[in-house]
Length: 268
Image (cartoon, one colour):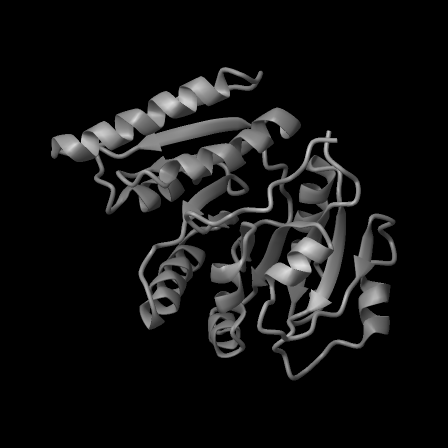
């Protein structure tokens, strides 16, 4: 069971009456036995008054408010100080991407040592995170997704769906086989269901195949890795990819940055 001092950070730009993002954050907090901290984006010029934030979460004992500040070592200083294990943002409309890009919030996501949940405007308010979709490409970093997926299997009794890519080149095929062997060995240590699905798609298209598989249940969580593109292209490449999936599919996304020195949830 997880430490109750751990937190889910919900970053918002406006208070939506349906409380979709808050509902998702509360569900994640329930799974990980943690609490929700809700805050304005630190880059936003139009701050929501703290009193309004307090009223927004007044019906929930395990949620509190928090005001972020901009600093060179954010977000990871704040993540470590307040024991935050996930961030969550909501893309409520198509033009929200312009807001988040303009206000540097995606830079935060790509630098964070924790994964980020992204809830789109097509995502259902209802969710149970009981079905986790994992596309597996030819990159060795795919193994990192398995660790995070296992938490949902272990603590939410979720079914994990593995969708390995099909490659022709032997080196790429070997990497995918090694990822599956690693996954089977790790998952065998715990008691939860997982399934491996055959796919005819290459690594280039396997992420979208995951979303198409998940459309049988609109609240299925799809776990993605950000790309390792360097420099100025890092933000452009990853935000374009996320924008496409948010605009076309209803599923929440768990976005993981590769090869980060992660702050992992603690047993305790």
